[in-house]
Length: 511
Ligand SMILES: [Fe+2]
Ligand SMILES: [Fe+2]
Image 1 (cartoon, helix red, strand yellow):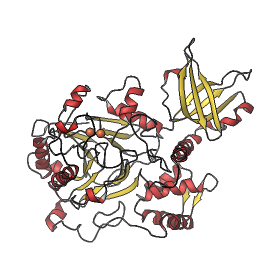
Image 2 (cartoon, helix red, strand yellow; image 1 turned 120 degrees about the vertical axis):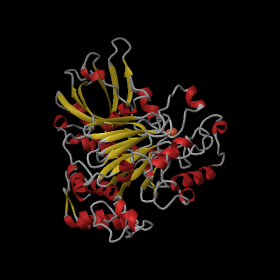
Image 3 (cartoon, helix red, strand yellow; image 1 turned 135 degrees about the vertical axis):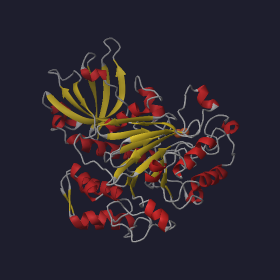
Image 4 (tube, protein in one colour; image 1 turned 90 degrees about the vertical axis):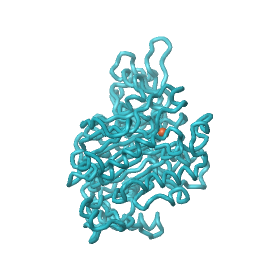
């Protein structure tokens, strides 16, 4: 974890004193604190000192520093003297304790005093700063000027801005983009036949544009090339030191009539080591569930017809019973989705205490999105509500191939950029949907399909649902791919798919 964090600071052109690094690692969400330190330090101070860390902690937590809960040790720390509580000596020998560190959650407490308009301005300013910082280091964009200074710029120049309106000229079908930064906004022209015209520009994404300014200044600046924040090609990769595995699921929809009880039973049997795949089962240390834990109430029209459990508290009680069937040595991470009973605006907080109370002690409820390390492998987990906005906006993309959408999320370094669509965005002071750092695994759900792919060395997983097709999905023409468990070897990120759809696991396909 230490190297990861040092590399993260380095990617932001900051050096961290050794003592400062240790102090950061001792906090409950080291990455979250690191982000705040980078933001606070600004471009002028290249070194992060212990004093800066201490004062950030004093400022933000009133001096209190929380440490990770006992039982599961942080990655990279010394192994615990005894096994975690609740595991006997036999299971401790068979299963080395999984190492889990929560690095950051997208959700932060809202500043209650800000009027909504101001709060959204704060959110977008935070997004702009975070993504512009990533773009600023690019050779093509060195010397990028603030939009307000374009009038005085050289004939060839660059800007970094957030895309506003995108429209087409009536006659010649050139594109006109409105691009905004902290200094102002400008209209730029993307000529119809240029390579830049073959791209899709999404509202509220941050891009770098190289521009050519006409001799007559009345003409709109022309876009020559487009740059997205992107995933750097060379970066530190997280891999587990031993062949431990993590299993990824999503969209359990507990409480729905269509919950796949038999397939769940088979999954539990497999994880308990029953059947021929006992060896794989034994190496699994983590289970991640990427949201829509329960079916919820009133999420779509006439949902009550599809419900087996009509009370949301009862749905969570049933979730707790189902998760208690998982072997207790597993580290289970659950995040909420749009069907869960937390505020739907993203980033979403973790399940509140009154819903999480009944969950077994080996289950951790985290926010949506959340960044965490599983045995040294950094996972960015996001439920995936923004598929509903990104799929219609990006030509050729469908729910059947969710990983294509995830590639675009990574190129934009943002999970849900579009404001005012189907994904409600919470006006928090910091944009928790920015993807930073680049993870080793990006996992989503929500699509109810299944996908494995990779992008610039990042494993992309769209985890499968445990709900059969519902009437509502039939109406919307979505054909789910349920009950597929993605089992990832954390030492090399190879994936094995176990299909429980028709009962026992069939054709395990490696990829
Ligand atoms: Fe779902
Ligand atoms: Fe969902």
